[in-house]
Length: 189
Figure (cartoon, helix red, strand yellow):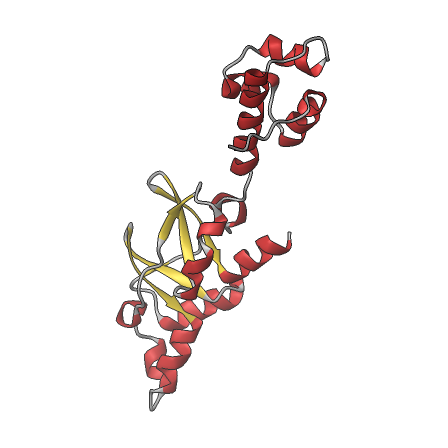
């Protein structure tokens, strides 16, 4: 069995770096806030059990500090209604510098449309201009998957082998969208 403890002299530095209070650490470790204060001040030599509880609580805080969907998402989510024309979708994508849009019918998510899909559609038309005024509902792609704001970013990478974007929800409302460039940017930061 491997038990990893921390030096009591480093508790305060680690706690402050993680941005948690003495009270929060005490709650997580199952000890009193005054004991945390005394350990940090060097006034008390903690028992093995207490030090292990503190180390475990700090370890959980470090793991929970990993990036979440809410940390990398773009907001607000730019969407279109199903009756929007393809030409209006193209103009919106151009104006906003985006390459895909979630498509709604009222408040219901019904699909998506991407610039790649539009290009492929227009390339098959004898006269592409006729398709430009048709509603996007006639050319829908699948809806983007949704994840909660607390979903770890590391869990999302494999999704991007199959989709262009992921919608991020908070409760029952749309909070943001994550695209491939958002994922790449998160890794650079």
